[in-house]
Length: 202
Ligand SMILES: CC(C)(COP(=O)(O)OP(=O)(O)OC[C@H]1O[C@@H](n2cnc3c(N)ncnc32)[C@H](O)[C@@H]1OP(=O)(O)O)[C@@H](O)C(=O)NCCC(=O)NCCS
Image (cartoon, rainbow, N blue to C red; front, side):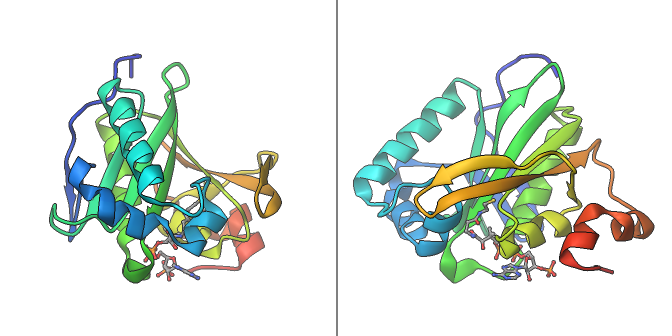
């Protein structure tokens, strides 16, 4: 991939999932999704997340999309109301790397939406954007997020944890990676450091 801006606008369709651009009329839904304790606990979102925070968020999202520096898409079932968000940012064109992130609103969790959205965007990043290495930074205590990473074929790396200060005190973020779109074999998964830390997964 060159240092070209990321494609905009973008709409990605998967099984039972459509990722689409955020729209100004998503404001009320966005606030309802993000003003929630788990989002406050595990993401850098302001809390409480009110309409003013929502307007600022949509504005920044639009700027990042229009200048091509990031991909930031609403997760929807059918292109309608948003139920979450998936992002791709911090692109390093020389290393062909980028970081991804995700969140799903409380009423919509445990339905495979984060996994579906992350798989869809990861596939697009590898096959269309030709990125070689995709990264997730996750607090090891965030079991839901580490489960999503593992389900989508990401591996826990042995990279040193990233120290972060937040309203809940200091945290150490692990780095997970997805390299060259390659899904690990079962043997590789069992040997993986994540299997040692989080238990085996068949
Ligand atoms: C993390 C989050 C995005 C997961 O969204 P989701 O749509 O519920 O995830 P999925 O339904 O795709 O679940 C994927 C896997 O995670 C597991 N999982 C989801 N939530 C879980 C929880 N609270 N505890 C344990 N496992 C959980 C699912 O059972 C599933 O496992 P499986 O592969 O064994 O079936 C959601 O909980 C969230 O938005 N949390 C707050 C924001 C956040 O933490 N973002 C990530 C920051 S790194």
